[in-house]
Image 1 (cartoon, one colour):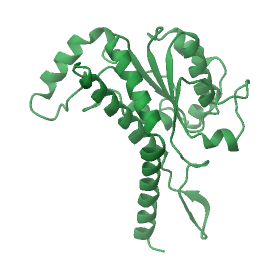
Image 2: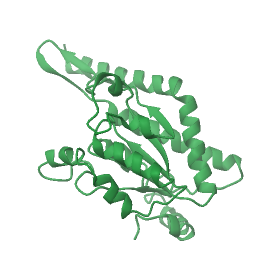
Image 3: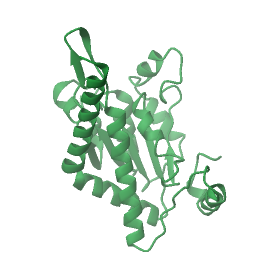
Length: 251
C-alpha cells in the first residue's frame, strides 16, 4: 500500500468526520453560536480552554485573523499544548484534582461569561472540574468532546462523570476512542489522528455562526483582520481599543 493511498484514506476519513459534524451537530452548532452572540451583545466575555492537544483547537480561536477578538484563552500552566518538558507532565497535570479550581479563582471569569471547554475524552479531572467549577460560578459552558468516550471508557474524576455531564451545550466531535483513523497489518498500532482537524473546524463553525447572529441583530461582530494585509494592524488596534475591557491576552 503506497503512502499516497494512505494519505487519501486519511483525508477521506477526516472529510467523513467533518460531514458527520456538519449534518449531526447542526443544531448544537447553531445553539453554541447563538450563546456566544448573546454574550457579546450583553457585554460579557468569552473564554476557551483545552489541555494537551485539545488546547490546539482552543488556541486556534484566540487572537485569530478572521476570528472574534473577544475570545480569550484560559490557560493552565504546564497543560497548554506540549510546551513543557517532559511532555508527559502535561498529561499528569490533567489528572490533578483541584487544579481547575485554582485556575478559575485567579481568572477574570465572572457570572454570565461563556467558557468553551475542549477535551477529546472528557474523562480527566482537569476538564471535568473546569466545567463544574465554571458553572458553579454562573458561567455558561460549551463542551467540545467525543461523546463515545463516555460509553467506552471510565471517568478519571472522583464523581465518575465526564465533561459532557457538566455543560450547558455539548458539541460531539464524533472522534472514535483512541483518535486514530488508519490501521495496517504491518503496523502494530493504529495511527493518523483527526481530532485536531475536526475540533478546530467545529469551533470555527461555531464562531462563524456567532458572527452571523450578531450581524443579523445589527451588531458589528468584533472581528480581527490579518496583520499581513494592508490596514490590518490599524483595524485590529481599533478593535482592541473598543473592547479593551473584554480582551485579556494583551495585558
